[in-house]
Amino acid sequence: MQTMISFILNNQLIKTDKPSGGSLLDFIRYDSNLPGTKIGCREGDCGACTVMEGSLNDEKISYKSIVSCLTPLGNAHGKHIVTIEGIKMECLSPIQNSFVANAATQCGFCTPGFIMSLTAHSLANEKSTKQKAIASVSGNICRCTGYKSIERAAEDISKLLEDKNINNPIEWLIEKRYLPDYFLSIPKRLNEIKENQQIANPNDVIIGGGTDLMVQKADELVESSINLFQDRKDLKGIKVENGRCIIGAATTASEIEQSSIIKEIIPEISSCFKLISSEPIRNMGTIAGNIVNASPIGDLSIIFLALNAEINLGPRILPLKDFFLGYKKINLQKDEFVKEIAFAIPTKPTLFNFEKVSKRTHLDIASVNSAIHLIVNGEKISSCSLSAGGVSPIPLFLYKTSDFLKGKAISSELIIQANEVMQGEISPIGDMRGSVDYKRLLLRQLFFAHFIKLFPNKVLASDLLSNSDMR
Ligand SMILES: Cc1cc2nc3c(=O)[nH]c(=O)nc-3n(C[C@H](O)[C@H](O)[C@H](O)COP(=O)(O)OP(=O)(O)OC[C@H]3O[C@@H](n4cnc5c(N)ncnc54)[C@H](O)[C@@H]3O)c2cc1C
Ligand code: FES
Ligand code: FES
Image 1 (cartoon, protein in one colour):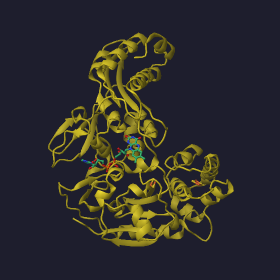
Image 2: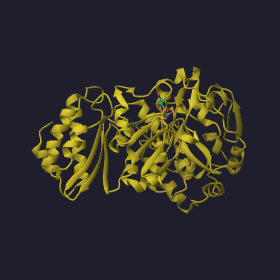
Image 3: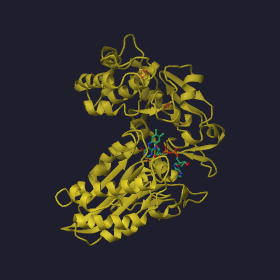
Image 4: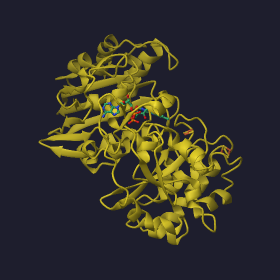
């Protein structure tokens, strides 16, 4: 069913009956004649189309960067979408001035995307640092500058933001001319937009953040009836109930990364999110989208397999291990959808580690990835859950290796023996990301890395490498 989509684009209220599955980028450029947002790859890779998305939560507005090429137009409903034209004032903003002062722009094609990422960074309710400012442009590619001048501009911007009022950044940013005055009126105006009462039809295509579907089926989606899941309140959020951590299906990777609940339960989970895609993609992609996509190298699938998570499909709850049946085949009936992912909160001190090898640090899917979750009692491993991606048609839970390690005392020799068990449990195929032998070697290295990192006094890289053969 097609519903009216209403949102604020820069300073203008939009009401449109254009298809929900069309791209926000096309709406911005072709329906709204705002050409500052550029079209590069249309696959979420280059960041030329980056815009800001503001949304209200408990009357408070917060902004984040998103790529408009992969944003279904329907996901803009009830939001404030800001393009480079939306921050135009009588003068350049301090962020734009820093780009000029550091010669951080040459042909200029990428520049609006960088400026929008850094403007979203300036709006965060936290202190800016050089590292955070640079991380905010992890989704932006520049083919001219070689990045050093952009890094210098980002560093200058983080210094300028030192005095920012983190409790009320918008007022501060307006006063310092980062943002035009109309930003103050946005919360009230968004409040006036009514929620879309979507009628869920089981046959409609479900879209979360769109970061998989919009890459694979952009043309098809314009013609399809779709179910927008990303803003469904019943599917969002992270809570603790009866000793379990429950994550709503539509929770984004960034929301998991920043969750105080997750940081308290297993802090290492949050830090590994930096290895997943880029800031705008993490701001959009949902946990259910990652799992249902069933990519053998899906990072969230690998992380939550190692946490022994369960997947709630409404009428059924399954161990996540049993959800993946074959290459891109999942245990999901036609009228089912993912409601929640949950895992038991460990009662004893627990160790967790995630490793990933990809060609680039950011914006790249893994060649091979792996996660491990251990409970250790003195010298001995009392519980082990190990997962690996890129070495089988599905995201793999390594039952035999996990069982082998259980009850044993940690030593380099044990890890070498466990690698032999693990190599018998995997079945990688050669593809563009590497040959069979290369993937076997990569997983061995990641497996060793888990133990070198978690037990630096007991397991030494030199012992592992000198005493094990290629496999
Ligand atoms: C540039 C780029 C970089 C990326 N890098 C990485 C990376 O490093 N690691 C990684 O793992 N992934 C990566 N991805 C893939 C993607 O971002 C993730 O898989 C993301 O979590 C998908 O979530 P989504 O909500 O955007 O999925 P969508 O595209 O909205 O949906 C994906 C699938 O899930 C289905 N679906 C969504 N929600 C539900 C639900 N609740 N119930 C049933 N079905 C549902 C949809 O119908 C669709 O079939 C990258 C993607 C891009 C574009
Ligand atoms: S056009 Fe490249 S990320 Fe959108
Ligand atoms: S300035 Fe030309 S692509 Fe960045």
